[in-house]
Length: 180
Image (tube, rainbow, N blue to C red; front, side):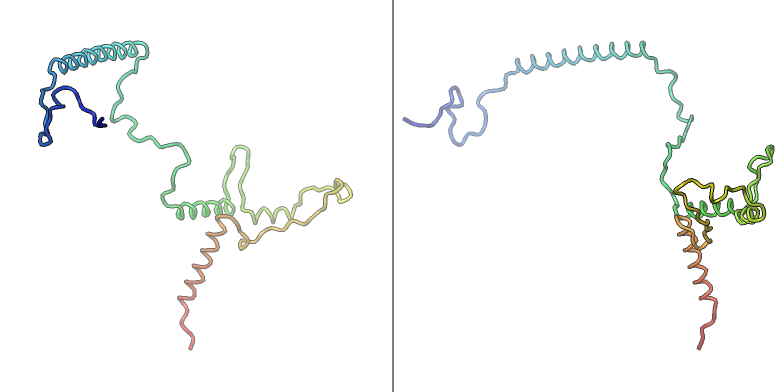
């Protein structure tokens, strides 16, 4: 008994050199499949058209958007920085200016912004009322407040101040003639 399987029909009579089919494709079945596919596509097209028209009636979309209206809408913050070093320098400059200049906070109420150094001088001349050390709550120690010097500036503006000091020192070094 042989383990070889034989195919029924015309393929069983194939010789080893023949590499083609001996029968044509069934045109009738292909046409039936094509007609069914066309019918299904037509039904889906009609159903989608009906669905879109019903949804359009239920939720109108309004007037079409103009390509010229709202040409550029900025995204919500935070945004990427284009030039972070310049923005940091501008921020620190504005902070230093607000600490060292006069400005009106509320002109109607007579509130004025004064430089920090001037405020300290005014507090030294006319101190605020304070309670006596004996009246301090238990567990609270009185420490003298020490104001930081500009060299003690920390944070992002401290970096800018440090960098500016180094740049000034380098410029001063470059301007001096060499000693022999």
